[in-house]
Amino acid sequence: MIKKLSAQIFTGLVSLTLIINQAPSFANPSSAKQNSPNQLYEKPKAELPDDYFAVYVIVDRIARANSLDDKPWRIVISPSNEVNAYASDINVLTFNKGLLKHIEGDSSALACVIGHEMGHHVEQHLGYGPALQNEAALNELKKAEQEKLIAEQDAEIQNKLAQLAAGTGTAIGGEVGGTAGQLIQIGAAIFGGTAQTSQAEIEEIKRRIDAEAEERFKKRVIEISHQHEFEADKKGYLYSVKAGFESDGCINVLKVLGRMPGAQTPSKTHPTPEKRIEKIQELKAQYPPQTLKTEGEKLLNQKNNSLLNYEVFTEQLPDNLSYSGLKVFPITGTTEDDLCRIVGC
Image (cartoon, rainbow, N blue to C red):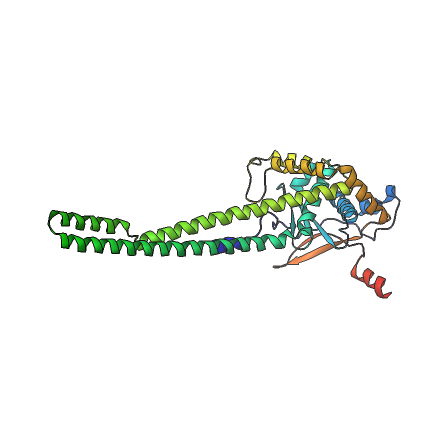
């Protein structure tokens, strides 16, 4: 049972909601150029649909303000009405329409969501999540086997003692004879019968040990998932504030999530929004917003207000299916751009 559970997808991070055969309507994207701040986003605003424009701008700013512009990011906006966003594959960030419409008008809340999902990738939760589950499963299996071995040894010792006691009592009773001897024999029989552990009882003990191990494993999986969510929340706060967004963005989006039915009960994958808000408040005290913004502005200024390039991508799936999104290139541009930088073209 534990082995089966350890193979589960780490559902706190990954969900397979794809835009199947539905490509967004993009204009012809071109390389972003160096601009003055008030002209910085003119080209992407003209070329991208509104949802993609908003997400692109935030990904661009977060990446440049937090030194995350050394890798490509892929943005997918799903038509799903589920209130959700998730990290998947390698650096894929998916945002459901159902979430975007509930935080409409709050770019700082959106920035926290985007930073949170980028944080899952940076912290390698998609890789470590299943690995930690497997480790937890192996630990519990090992512990359960040790407990079962001890139970079997205890039962064997108990049975031998019972047999010894019963045999000794019978022998003594025979030697004593009379009423006293009969009483000793009867007592030995009763003691031996009740003290021995049957094979059925041993198997029941083993089943109980397995059940307890499985419960410990499930608890550990929840702990791992919750810890990863807290870590991603921290990244969401740090990344978004460094990028110049308001420090209450994370709190705002968590308040929205807190209004969902059943939100105030911890799930298998996520802590309650209330608990997550408490952690964000602690982060605000530990990492003052103005300090973070100053750090981010310094990095942004070093990049000379040069945006990251982007282009539409389409991923092919089995059965002739596909999904599309927006690829945001690293600061080095495409592979061809970086090649020309190194060897000259």
